[in-house]
Image (cartoon, rainbow, N blue to C red; front, side, top):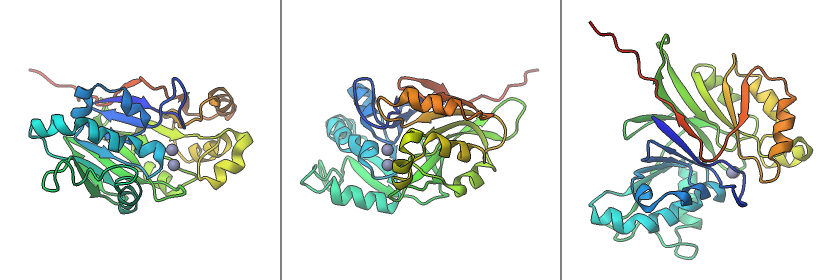
Length: 273
Ligand SMILES: [Zn+2]
Ligand SMILES: [Zn+2]
């Protein structure tokens, strides 16, 4: 399984794209501005989009993607792109984006019978099976209903337990997340740190993390895990990563980079003879 980081910034600027991850070319995890770098051919391969929450930096490419691929998919007889999210998130998309004022209703285009988008609801704890990939919906604690996702990677050598690629979504402190993650073998943790400690007040009221809050969260995760920091605001990267460096965490923490490719599946060793 291959995961491409299309965008992992908290906002836009040259070289900064907002959150989007592409899994094996056909499942998109969040639809931020990073999606715009894909070719039309690559866009047309996307069959499923899982959305963490309704904020613009995570959803704004859904409507543009639908517009770009509608002709290609309908000419090839492909079904709708399924957009999976909480019911509250889907209601927000219907009311505030696909409302005919901000953007056309692509859940009824090119025709109501065979639209390019289909909205599908999930709840926390569901395990989605999408094109052979298993994705568990995790809890998050943000200013709007929100979730994170865990992608099952397959068991590695010497371990019967599958590893998980985990993305927290946008979240403030959230004990429920750590309760669940303690039961999983976390291979990679993608966790947000939207603000520096100087803006800890802003982080608190907007239900995001700053480095000191990140330290308290990561202390609830046992062992030494590969941790990738995402959603840092443009221009704040150095300050935030320096503050994180001073946490003295036992985890291996680095900043996530757009364009980065992660190989997730570890094939079990095959015995011959
Ligand atoms: Zn958000
Ligand atoms: Zn965000």
